[in-house]
Amino acid sequence: MERVWPAALTAALCLVALAAVGVVYAVAAVASFEFKLLGPKLFNLASLAILSFAFIVSLAGSSVWAIARGSGASLGFALLSGFFLARAVRTAAIAYLVFSASFAGGARLGAGGLSLVIVLATILGALLLISGVLILARSSGSPISWWLWAAGTALLILSIVLGLTPRLLPSESMGRLIPLTSAASNLVSAAALAFYAGSILAASGGAGARE
Image 1 (cartoon, one colour):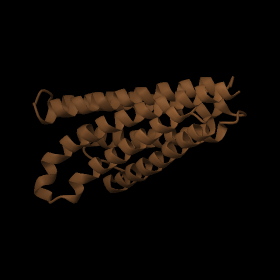
Image 2 (image 1 turned 45 degrees about the vertical axis):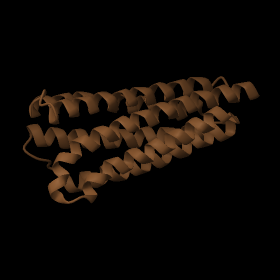
Image 3 (image 1 turned 90 degrees about the horizontal axis):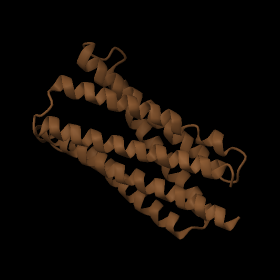
């Protein structure tokens, strides 16, 4: 329990911080594309600031396995560390695309390859997050943790579907829908991360009660 609680608190705080990042990015996207309150350059600068903060948070979250190492919940936290690392890779790739497209005249590494990295990191991160929190919830025996995990998983899947929706529609509809569905996807994903944070904290409390 001495190792589990600090690791759980670190993971939960980092998930909440990433959720806040998603909300801020969604608000900035709507303000820029729908209400024209932010110009393209200003929006891209704001995006880079948001992505930089998300990258730092993800790196901090990747330490949870080291904090929990040696405890009975180390496997769950190892998977969570993998999620944060995948999130850091995804964030760095997105930041590079935004920077190169806005200030460097295009991505030198190839936008297609980086887009594939982003998709793979998103899928891998989602699987690691779902598995890691599930292991923690099941090992704790806490029904609250289990239900929070189920709600978070449903919302996470919904956010992925929302993110992919514009790419399944005709090209003439894609341009307008991408900012809106991206904002919606970020908001739903933020809610999912908040539920996962609650599940982790409930799981650590359940594990402490069992001990």
